[in-house]
Length: 158
Image (tube, rainbow, N blue to C red):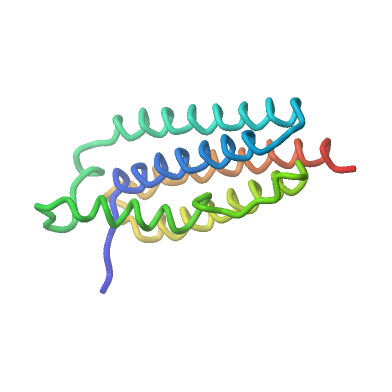
């Protein structure tokens, strides 16, 4: 069975992924002894929170057509399905080696790459008239995350 998503639903997923990312960094910070690493991870957590707000703002700007539901869902089960889909894909319940900043950053980069692959798949599932082009903004933002994390990785590597 095929399911077409709309841009509103993808932004909802993007917001959840950013919440999961913020939690990932907060958890890593709590388990890291090095003060400078802890500060950087807290900063990354705050960055994810800011991105969530940005996606929330972008979502609010969507047209009614881009928010149009493609399925009859009086019980709101689609929202629960989307949350489960996101939670099982990126940043959720990842096992990380908090003894090494290099390993934390590698895990974060891997999660960001996973998110881009996820969004590329979602972009293909959003019809053009339901905001497919809007998904590109999310993908570009995630690519920026990888660039920033890679710079941190280069400076953290021995």
